[in-house]
Amino acid sequence: MARAFKRRDGRAASELREVRITPGFVGTADGSCLLEMGGTRVICTACITEGVPEWRGGKGLGWVTDEYGMLPASTPGRKARPIGRADKRSVEIQRIIGRVLRSVVRFDRLGERTIVVDCDVLEADGGTRTAAVTGGYVALAAAIDAAANRGQCSRQAIASAVAGVSVGIVEGRAMLDLDYEEDSRADVDMNVAMTAAGKFVELQGSSEGRPFDRKQLDEMLALARRGVRKLIKLQREARGG
Image 1 (cartoon, rainbow, N blue to C red):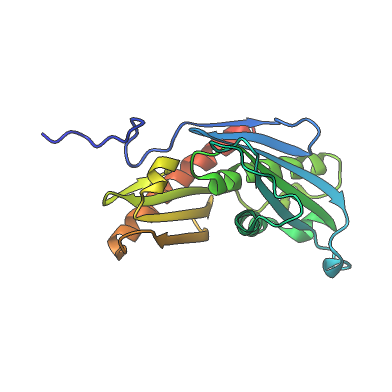
Image 2 (cartoon, rainbow, N blue to C red; image 1 turned 135 degrees about the horizontal axis):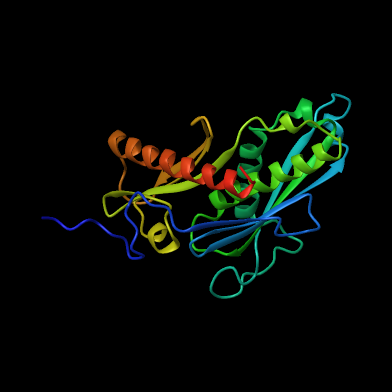
């Protein structure tokens, strides 16, 4: 009998790393959490301000935006802070996170308020952008709950939960939630964000080595759907149901 496939950390190909979500991690934010997926740890905060960007004013609609960054010691060897210059990778990632989070917000029920979600990577061991999406949603939803409790907006300003996860093809096998070592040798790397209803918000993938076929794509998407379902369950538990 063939032995069951195991990854170097003992997981099956279809398993997430250990996930921990600590809500309210930053007491001064309107909403926050620490999200840990294996060796990746991200602090996510959400802060609400009155008013919206000038181009959006006078429409009765709110706005959500995101900033993403990696702290200097988040990877082996110090990563320099992008002071006075744009970090192109971080700008690309924060645009993705912002798009994903905005997709589940009802701006007419938020009112003319802006929520800034900050995602700061403490430690990076693969999947930081999808971890930031998952944790960013928890922080965003908590901030909207806090504003609703103050009578500032409707609790229904959130239309759905959303979470993100990485998938890939490593040594010919579809795998869920790649760590850095797996990602660095993957033939295919893909990031997927989905809603609680199983609808896709973001699909970002490419071949890093061998091209992939439709069967492999379907395998990766099936793994992503499974992973997102579990992450959304953990989000709900962290938020108290």
